[in-house]
Amino acid sequence: MLMRTDPFRELDRLSQQLLGANGTRSRPAAMPMDSYRSGDEYVVHFDLPGVSPESIDLDVERNVLTVRAERKPEYGEDVDLHVAERPRGVFSRQLFLGETLDTENIAAQYDAGVLTLRIRVAEQAKPRKIAVSGGSEPKKINQ
Image (cartoon, rainbow, N blue to C red; front, side, top):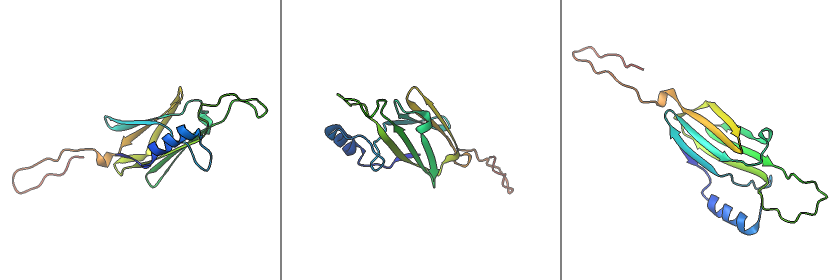
């Protein structure tokens, strides 16, 4: 099970749009995300357009997944900038990963501005059949 950790995300996103604020190291910008379960794995997509794959950092600590990335401006310092609407700076997102997920084997792929994570359901969390026997001797559980 994935749980969002940022209850004020929409308020932050609105303030960024109104104030024109981009992410900085002290206040990272939010990154849009989709998440769904497909069979025995969860798939999470993060929108990170224009981000270099080398700037993406993934960490898992105590079932908390942290995704950080940085998008730097493509222009130099001595330019006369007229319009700057494209988000840049530091992007960050944290997800609480439930105990039922295998945090030791997370696959990550970055393609066309989308970071895709695949997180398998842990073997001990998968449903299994329990055999019922007749008589006085119990049967072993099939795993």
